[in-house]
Amino acid sequence: MREPECSFLLNVRRGKVSEEECLARTGGLEQELTELATSSQLPEDPNERGVEQWMLDAYCRRWAV
Image (spheres, helix red, strand yellow):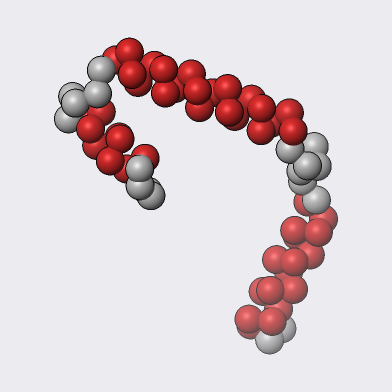
C-alpha cells in the first residue's frame, strides 16, 4: 500500500485517528467512488471472449502448444 494511505491506516489501527475523522474520510472516498462509477469510460460488461482468447494465446506461447 502506498503513502499516505498506509500511514493513515496504521494511525487508525494505533488509535491515533478519531472516529469522526475516519467517518469523514470514508464519506469522501465513497463520494469519489460514486463519481468515478458514473463517469467511467469502461464498458458495462467485460470482453470475456477477448480475455479468454488472450489467455489461450498466452498459454500456447508459453508452452509452445
